[in-house]
Image (cartoon, rainbow, N blue to C red; front, side, top):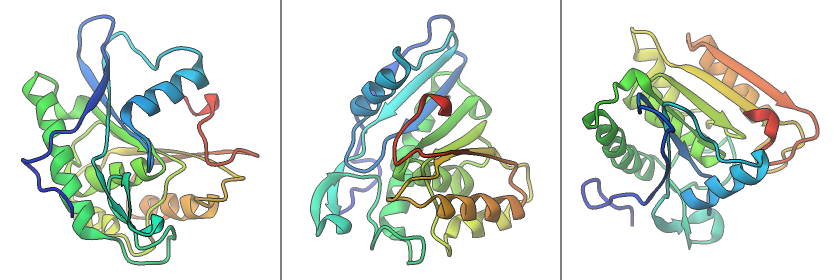
Length: 219
């Protein structure tokens, strides 16, 4: 059962800025991972923490919930999927609940004095998809969005949210490995092309031979 907003406070792994805090970056992990796990993985790739002079980096952890692709097994996932495919309906009930939960995290940053246009939202795999739902449907005034090895379903409601917008939308930065066999490179390209056609400013970087993983070139 999905948890309702107000009853869930996400665990957070935080890398504080070295200097005065003037911006925040929310980095969402992929399915089955955790905030601490993502921070550790990035540190292994870069050989140092993903850290900045004035930007706080926040790695929240998704609550455990039944996950259909694992035959209902419990996993740390942002939402449920009917299957890992771009050609099936989205599990909107679980996506919408998590948008509310993550909005609380954004609100905490705003209450601490960080303006919405100084908050970046993104993630790896499922985390990137969650970030696109969160930003383009609920928080179109954030600084930007990034999606690494991520995709949107062909009939995603994100596209409807973008179509209804009459303001400036946050820019999207995407990276994807051409050898990714879990989330196909073509799915990410389709996502990027669809959002670009709807007026989103996008950048798409392909990494030849890279599988479903992080790469130093993504940063």
